[in-house]
Length: 221
Ligand code: MN
Image (cartoon, rainbow, N blue to C red):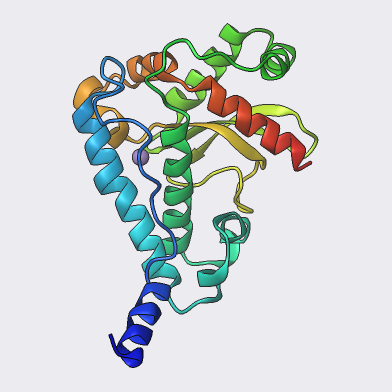
């Protein structure tokens, strides 16, 4: 290959999409029983893919091309609705895939379990609060467990693809668990029964990952 052609190839690579989906860490059918294969496939390969690709389009030629997703989220008030929706969509889904797992009965770390009990009274009370946040979200959005600036846990909900890292949300923090309550996340299996989806998701929750994210969030305080 001639040098000029090689240069063109390299240039093309460096101007390619900045934000990419990480591979799904399990098969589409791995969560069957709680989340069906078709929902996972469409959710990951169509919806998830679209947020990454539309984010890249929305930031093309802007300073955000050189920023991290966290930085972009922290300044959404100054950015276009397309960036807000797709940066949120990309971040939220990348988090969502990792906090699910086919592994049975993963447990929160002792430290996280203690913090959950201290904050919410019990694990069951926490799950109830989280499910309520998801059930009460009118239309599309997310339910979150996050760590605030003082290292305290809190449950919140955001509309659309907003999340607690955005400067425009009321309750700010670092999300460590996010549940997608858009209809595309559950409708094929659960139809209008969002509450059933919200209760089934605990069966495939990856507490190891949530515990790791809890430690990471605390270490950045
Ligand atoms: Mn989704």
